[in-house]
Image: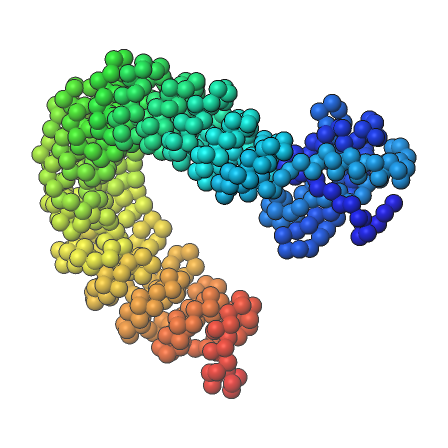
Length: 619
């Protein structure tokens, strides 16, 4: 057998079509299963490697070989495959048989013409005509698995396309993914090119879907807002009822389109599918309500047999969808037409009014509150009313709308977490909203949540100090040192999640207990500030003498804040603590030094800095 390196007659193996015509092996007769080929892979970088493949099947259609993968290229198609030798495992083959095989194989597989594809790419009509006269196969595929017709379309060479069609080019050949050229044309909106195709006498396979099993060319034309392309496919022999894997039909796609002309085409031609339902329960009308154009929505709403009462999987009706969208004129249209469902509940028990309150859209909330058909007592599954939702917003006008139409008594009711509207206003609302909600809360300003959070705890989270500044002088909202269910004080919460402004105000209060430790691991507020890795918060704490005195206090594990700074390689925090009296020689219970901690935790910045300190040099 010839060696791989000296094989003189290397022959191309097509990557995308591993079926080798049987006439290439006529001298050998029926090839046995197991016939082995040595494959040389020429990689894009110029290197070569070798793999072995073998006959998997041999029948009237041709010879199929086992697949192989080129791991050196990102995609196997980037490499060139050549059969440079082969051996037989089941029957002996003579040297003459090998030579005959190579000759016949070369004749059978050398029909690919790079010149043909170049002509179609560049629009070279004269050279293409010469190739056609030589009897060249116009339906062959290149190394990417596409035909000359694809390149002619891609480069908008209409004259080349016409010439290819005149001499038998087949537009229905698919690419390696099984996708037709019509999908690409529809997506790009190449109207003139598509007209050339539909003028041909050959039947066009226009219903081929994307490799994902989703869109047809008709769907893509609608999705990409090409009305003329859409009409071409509507006039052609396309399946107007084709659906995607999620059961979307052309009506669903058009309903989301922002151009009513697409919808008019479907209605005028009486295309079925206007009441079709997707896998997640959406009708075309639902999609228009959620995403579509107002005129499209209005036209669908007026259509006969419109499925007005259907709901999605989440039990959202038309009202829920238009409210979620936040478009007042959609809501006004439903009100004017007296469409049912204004007080329906979804799977969270949310009515459209509750959704409007949750979204905080003033116009939507006003329209729904003004309606006599909406329930003002509705609550979600977790017992939230409209009061709870508007209290966390920034617009005080939302409060005014709810105040005008709802029972004030509901503002004093807790939700499933034990939160009053006042709790939400303190934690999330604007200062104006906070004051308004507080004004109707009576004596409830000391109420606790299920987690034993008082207003002072929620105010400690805020960026603005306004909330703690309002509560503490009035002596409301809970004691400044009160602990939550998890053992956290307002000071600890401000250190972990609040702002310097809020923290600074708390530190000015004489009643504040500053040496408080966490329940879990007896950590000081300096430990907590280190965890947050906020130097501004740390500076604010260390500016207080009583807190600065805690700089070397260890938690229950024996670790000071300095140990954690080193373990997390927080150099600036480390310098700040040392400059405020942190002792670098204190060791935890296990006796591990700061330098050892830095080495174990791979903290090079801190390790380098510690090595420069005199305390370490002396030790």
